[in-house]
Length: 126
Image 1 (tube, rainbow, N blue to C red):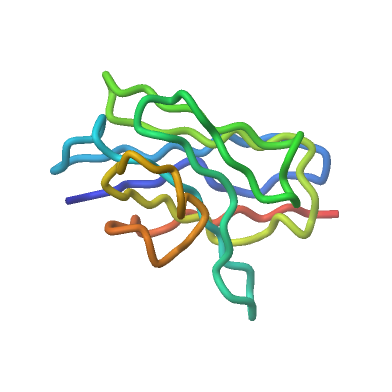
Image 2 (cartoon, one colour):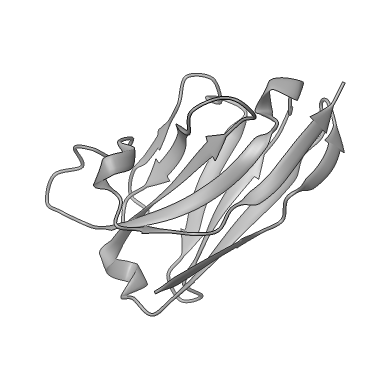
């Protein structure tokens, strides 16, 4: 299984970035997908998640209204559109996959995810 995150970079505050995560080696359309981030000196935290079908999305309070998550099951790819970026959004962003269950419980729980990508660095300058 491979999750390849890309799209990170340096952006000024107020700007936008779109992260992509291409999955291979698993049945992508059977997986819920999530994005997590880890800022320097901090623990990894939940950012956003999307159900296997794309029917439901979930966001951390800190990014609601600014970030959007979407997926293209035909391309085995999940996206994170980040708008109105703030310096506190600076972090390494990781995509993760978990096998979808009937219940959406645990979408924001790091321990629920089975597979992780290598991360992509997002730096927001003030």
